[in-house]
Structure formats: structure tokens, C-alpha cells
View (cartoon, rainbow, N blue to C red):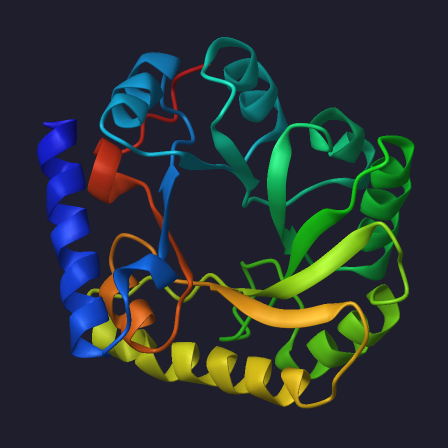
Length: 231
């Protein structure tokens, strides 16, 4: 079943790329594996997936120990400052930077490991009360402040669009994020490259790709419904 799901997702990505005249190589599929057991991740890995996204620090730590070492782990969930140290040497990118204090802590921990951590600034593009992320207006200020930190590299923006039944309803939000990235790029801030837009999930990733997503985060579309009762 998982292979069939992956094949369908891949076909949808390809179709969206063709529709927007983009090469398939421009889009990274991140398999969102939160709450899923290592066996399922291994199955996805065997089917060719190398980028996995997790929301919880503990899940990254646990799965990192038992799964292949060439997996690229993405921290896509809300990250508390006191937990940065546990994943700093395990992830390839942190998508959910939403405050200067978090960026500062990532910088401190990255310095200890002598690495530069690629990060994305999380923008709450629809101003939803239940979502993390900075407002569109505050994003530029945060980027200007965090750009001075030597051991992080600001690579772009991430957003979680509203849950909708019709993906077209989120097109405007993806367009807004894309425009925000263009505006930020035009400022030519040192240590800031708007080369990554992480947006689009199971319900709307095709529309997100059409509007410029470089990374899409697909969980249910690959693994099926999540089981939150798993410990």
C-alpha cells in the first residue's frame, strides 16, 4: 500500500511540475513520518525516500538510532529552545524557526558542533490563532536580526496553510509566501537566501508546487492516517 501511495504522490508532483513548467528536480518530497513506526519509514526508504520530516524531537532521536544513516531528517514541528541540543547534529534543516531566541539557541548549539545549520523562518501566513509562526510583517524583521548569527544559514520560508477541503482555497496563501520571499530576496541581506519554500501538505501540495514550493511535506498521503495513540 505504501508503495502505491508513494507512486501516486510522485505522479501528482510530476503533473504539478509539468503544469507549472518546472523540472521535477526542483521539488523535494519530505515524507512526514510523525507517529509512524520505524518499520514504515524503512519501507519508504526502501522505495527511494531519503527526506523525512518529524514534529517531535524525541521521535527524531529514536528513529535516528535505528534507521539508515543517509536519511536527511527535517525538523518541521514547533521546537523548544531547551531541546535544540538533542537534534542539532541529527537534522539537515530546521523548518520551524519562529523567534530570534530560538534562532540564537540553534546558533549556539551549531557552534558547539562546528556546523552551520540551514533554517527556514516559519510564517503564519493566514494569521491562524492555533498555528505557530511569525506574521508576514514580522518575518522580515526576524530575518534581519537572525541573519547576523554565524552558525545558521537562512535558506527560505516555511508555512502551514489552513486545513481546507478544496486546495484552491490555499493558492492565495502560497502566492503570498512566494511574494514575501521575492521581497526579502530583493533586500540582498547577507546570510539570507530565499532558495527554499517549504509549503504544501497532503491536501494541497500540488497547488503549492504550482505556486513555487521547493519542499512539500506529505504524511497521510504516503503513510495513511496518523495514530496518535502510539507511544
